[in-house]
Length: 470
Image 1 (cartoon, one colour):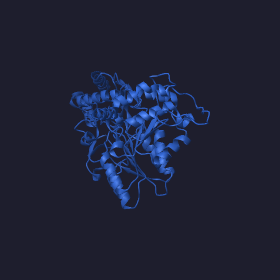
Image 2: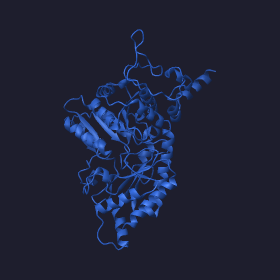
Image 3: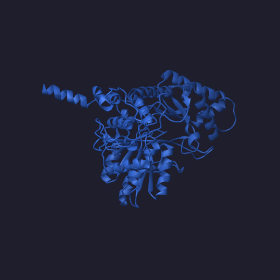
Image 4: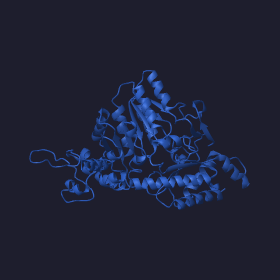
C-alpha cells in the first residue's frame, strides 16, 4: 500500500503541461473553495477593485495560494490564477503579469538595473525584436547605463547591403554595416570580467525575431556564473514553456509577451515575468509593478486564461505545420529563390543547439523566408526586363508576396491561431533605407492552425502574383 501511495504521489506531482493548463494544478473537485462555494468550473472574473475585511479587520485569504487580497492593483484573484498557472508551466517560484510585453521589459530594467551604481552594465543582442532593442538603447542612455551589445553565436547567417547571403564564422567575417557588434555574448562576458565590471543584466532573446538565431542557454549560464555576472533574463515569447523552460537551465527570469502564444487568440495585450527565485531582484520587480501601475485588468486576465487552456495543443500543431512548410519550401522549385530560416531544419546553422534545447522534437511555429537578389535578377532577365535589381525592387516584390498570398493574413504580431505574414523591412526601417538592420528581402511567417497544404498553396499564389507583376 505504501508503494502504491508513493507511486500515486509521484504521478500527481509529474502532471504534464496539458493537465496544468486545464486544471491549474488544483483538484477540480475543490474548485468551489475559490468560487464562493458555487462550484464554478471556470474561474470567475473578479471586477471588484477592493475586498472587504472580516470582523477582526483582517484580509481574506485565497485558499489556493494562501495570499491575502486587499486591492485589485496588486491582488486581483483572476490575475492571480493566471500567474499561478504560468508559474507552474515554467517551473518557477513566482509570476507577475503586467499590461504588455514592453511593460515586462521595463519592470526588469527598473527592478534589476535601475537601483544600481554608476558602473551598471546591461548585455543585450544586436538582433531581436526591434521595439525591445530600441527601448534598451533609450533606457540605458537616459540613465547612463553601459549597454554592451553582442552578435549571435557563431556561425550565423547575415545579409549584406544588397541582401546577399553571408555566413559569419568568426568576428572577422562580421558585416561592416553598423548593426553588428563583431563579438559574441561569451567574449562580452569575459571582457567585462577582465576589466573588473559586473554585468547587472544579461538580456537574451532566443530564437531572435525575425532571423531566429538560437542561444545556447546552458553555456551562457555556466559562463555567467563562473565570471560572477548578474541576472539572466530570457525573452521566451517564441519558445513558450511547451518547448523550452529556461529556468530549469539556470536562467533567473523568463519574460513573455503574453499577447502572442500564451494568449494565442489575438485579443489580449499582456506581458508576463516568471522568476526562478524570490530574491531581491524579484522583490524590486514586484515593487515596480505595484507602484508603477502597469497591471493587467481582470477581463484581460480572463481572456488570457481562456487562451492558455489550449497552449500545448496549439504549439504542437503550429510546430508540426511550420516544419512541414519549411521542408516543403526548401524542396520546391517555387521557392528556390528564397532562403528558408527555420531552426528545425538541419540546414539552420544553429540547429544542433536548438535540438539540444527544445523538447519533444518541436521547434515552434515561427520561420522566415528571405528573397535572394540573384534569383530575382534571373527572373527579370528571363522576361527581358532591363536593369539591375535594387533594394527597392526586392521590397516591392516581397510586399506583393505578403499581400497576395491567400489564407495568410498580412499583419503584425505572431503566435495566434491565424497564420500571419509580414515584410519586416517595411515595418522596422525608414523607406528606402540602404543599410537596414533587417534584410530587405525577409518575410516573417507566423504559422497558425490552418491546414498546412492550404498554407503552402497560399504562399505559392503570392509568389506567382509577384512574378506576374514583373
